[in-house]
Amino acid sequence: MANDRNAFKQYIENGYTFKGNSIVLGTAILDGEPLEHTHIKVPLKSLNRHGLIAGATGTGKTKTIQGLAEALSDKGISVLLMDVKGDLSGIAAPGASNPKVEERQAKIGIPYKPKGFPVELLSISGEKGVRLRATVSEFGPVLFSKILGLNDTQQGIVSVLFKYCDDNQLPLLDLKDFKKALNYITNEGKADIEEHYGRIAVTSAGTILRSVVELEEQGADMFFGEPSFDVEDLVRLDENGCGYISVLRVVDLQSKPKLFSTFMLCLLAEMYATFPEEGDMEQPKLVMFIDEAHLIFNEASKALLDQIETIIKLIRSKGIGVFFCTQNPTDIPDAVLSQLGMKVQHALRAFTAKDRKMIKLTAENYPLSDFYQTDELLTALGIGEAAITVLDEKGRPTPLSATLLQAPRSRMDILSPDEINDLIACSSLVNKYNRSIDRQSAYEILTAKLQAAQNRQQEEDSKEQSAKSKTTKTEEKGLLETITKNPMARQVSNTIVREVTRGLLGILGIKTRKR
Image (tube, rainbow, N blue to C red; front, side, top):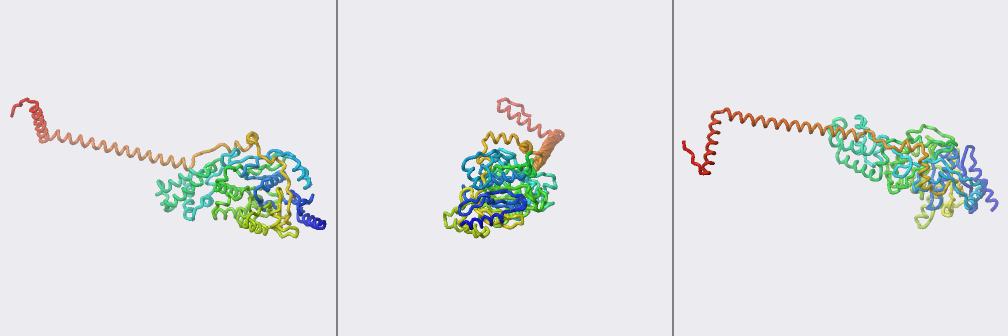
C-alpha cells in the first residue's frame, strides 16, 4: 500500500511540475486520503485553452470558481464571473476562519489567510452595478440575424436594412430604432427601397418584427443602447497589482435564456474584435467563468451554436480563457466541449440507469489511470473534491487526480445591501456607464421625416380645399351676375316674385288689383 502511495505521489509530482508560473488548486487524494504537499496545479500559460467545471448540485462548483478567481487575481490576471445564482459577491470581502477550513488547509499544506479582492459589480438588467450595453449596429446584420434565428431570406432583409440605414445616416442604436426602420422600409419608404435595393416581402418583415418583439419581451431593450461598454474596462489592475474581478450579476436572467445567450455572444464577439492577437502568452490577460452554462445553449439555434464554437476556437489567441460551469458535461455541445483543455469534475450522482450511462460517457473524457476506476471515482467524490486534469505547458493532458480543493480566502457568502451600495459608490465605472444616452438615431430621424411629410400633406390638402372653396364662390357670383344682367332672366325673376307675393296676399284675404 505504501509503495502504491509513493508511486502515485511520484506520478503526480512528475505530471504537475511546470517550468513557468502556476496556481495551486489543491492536493491529490488516493483511496480517500489526501497526500499533503502533493499539489495539483495548473500552469498559467494553458489557462487560455479554456476549461470545464461540472458536478451535481451542492458539490462545490461555485466555491471552486471563487477559489480560481482569487488565485488568478493574485497573479495579476483579470477575471469576469457570470453570477447567475447571486452568491459570488462575497469575493470582495475577507473570509472568516473556522475549524473545517483550517483542517482542510492543513491537509493541503497551505495556511489559510483571509483576503478580500478588488471587485466591480456589473449588470445588464435591473440589478445594481455598472450597466453593460451594446448598440444594434455593433452586432452587425449577420450576428443580429443569428440572434433572432432568421432564415437566409430574412437575413437578407436585415442586411438591406442595415445598408439602407448606413447609406442614409440612420444610426441603429436600440431596438426601437430597428423596429422603426423596418416599419419604414415596408411602408412609406417602400418605393425608395425597391428602386435602390430590391423588393422586400411584407410577410418576411413581419416575421423579423415578431422575433424582435420576442427578444424585447425578455428585457433586451435594457441591453441595447448607449453608452456601449468598452471591453477593455474588464482588464484592469488595482494599486497592488491584483487583477480586478468583475462580477456580472444576472440573477434575474435564469428565465430569459435568449437574452443571456445574446449577451454572451455579443461579449465574446466584441472581445475577439477588440483585443489584439497575442499568440502564446505566459499568462492570459482575462479569464471568464460562465456559471449555469446550459442557459447559453438550451435555446440557442444551430447558427448561434456555430458562432459560439467559432469564437471559442479563435479567442484563445487573444489571451482570453473561457470556463463553462454546469451540472452535467453533456449540457455543453461536443464541438465546444472538445475545446476545453482543463477539466474539474465534481461528484456526479447515479440515481437512474440514464445517470449511470451518462457517468460512463463522462469518464471517457479523462485520461486513463492505473490508480483510479474513473466512473467509480466520479460518484465517490465528496464536497469540495474533484477529479482534475489540465494541460501542461506543451498542451499535453496531465494525469487524472482526485483532488482536495483549497477553500476560498474571501467570504463564502454574499455581501449585504449596504456593502453592495458602498462597493458601487466606490466604482470608477458607474459614472461612465450608468448615465443613459438617447441621442438622435433612426427612430427620431424617421419620426421627424414622417411628421414633416404629414405636415406637408396637410398644407397641400388645406390649399386644395381653399382653392375649391374659392372656385365655388366665384361660380356662384358669376351666375348671379349673369341673371342680373340678362333682361329675359330679370323679367322671369320679377314675374315669379310678383306671383308669389300675390299668392301670399290672397291667403291673407287681401284683394289685389288684376292687371
